[in-house]
Amino acid sequence: MFKPLFKRLMPQISASAHCDLPCGVYDPAQARIEAESVKAICEKYQANEDPEFRMRALIIKEQRSNLVKEHLWVLWTDYFKPPHFEKYPQLHTLVNEATKLAGASGSKGSADPKVAEELLAKIDEIAKIFWETKQA
Image (cartoon, rainbow, N blue to C red; front, side, top):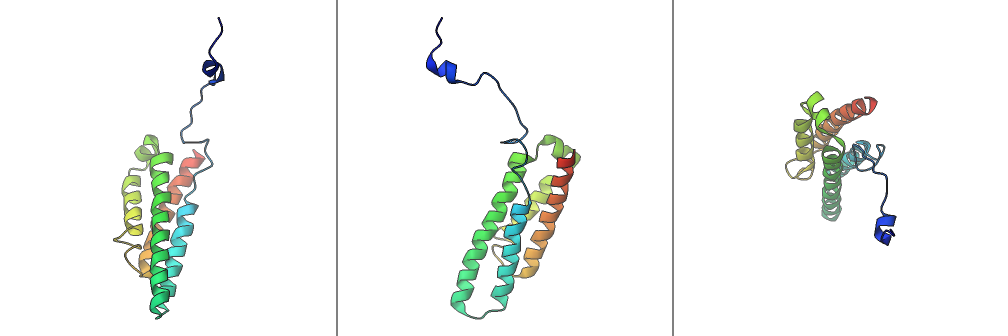
C-alpha cells in the first residue's frame, strides 16, 4: 500500500535530549557578559553629570538587565532539570535572587555598581553549579 506524502516525510527515528538541542548551547557566560555591561554602565553613570548621558545610560542599563534575566531564565527553564534541583536544592532560590537583582528591585532599578557586583556574584554561583552539572 502506498503511504501519503506527509507520512513518508515524517522522521522514522525519534530522539530525546535533556535540553532543546544537544547540550552545548547553554552557557551562563551570556548572563555574566550582560551583567558586566550593567556594572560598567553604573560606574559611568556615577562618574558623569550630563543629564542626557545619564538618561541614555539608564535606558541601556535597563535593556542589559533584561537580557541578564532572559539568559538566567533560559538556564532555569530549559537547561536545569529536576535532578539538578535535587542535587542543588539552593538552585531555585539562587536563580530567583539573581533575577531579582537584575530586575526592578536590583540593577534595573538602581545605578549602584555594588548592586551589579552582587548580581555578578550570584551569576558566578549559578555558573559553578552549571559547570558541575556539565561534568556529570
